[in-house]
Length: 132
Image 1 (cartoon, rainbow, N blue to C red):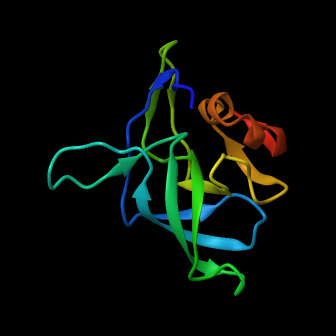
Image 2: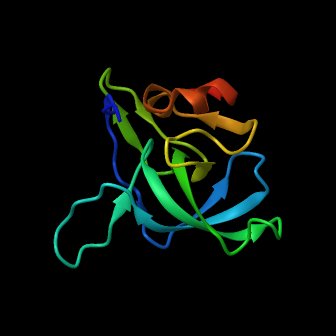
């Protein structure tokens, strides 16, 4: 997995609720764990833009509810800084359901996504409508 070219603040903790940004049938997601997180003892694992996470579907289509999936965070409310000095923030926290390799389960992504996600997961960028 490629590195992100921004100093991304990890603004989402385990247990945070996200909206699903694709058309896979899920509506509300809850973070269960963060893939590759190595932290301090007794510290809550956290995630930011472009990170792979494990989620469970809290609301949506009955076929996908109460199941675990992998997902990639594509938007976060917490402001982060790019290398050119620009500060980026979004209106909501959102993720896209993926498989273990990062290929999306849906066929389109609703709303804008960060370009840091496209650098790391190019398959998500192919189905996105707006890249910011």
